[in-house]
Length: 80
Image (cartoon, rainbow, N blue to C red; front, side):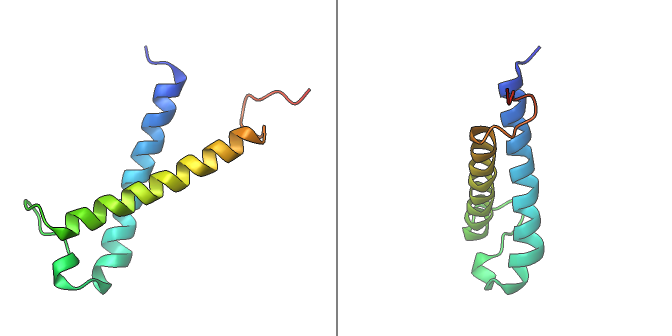
C-alpha cells in the first residue's frame, strides 16, 4: 500500500505531535503567562507556541533518526 519511507515519516510526525503537545500542555502551560496559553477554538499565541514545540520535537526526532541511520545502527542495516 504505502512504502516504508512514507510510513516512517508519518510515524515520526505522529510522535512529534503527541510528544510536543504533552510537553506544551503538561510542562509549559502552567508556567506561561495567560497570553501564551492556548484557548480552544481560537487562533492565538498559545497555538503558535504549541506548534513551535511540536516542530522542535520533530527536528530532534529527525536529527536522531538521520544520525542513527548514518551510523549504520538502524534495523535492517548490514554491517558486513
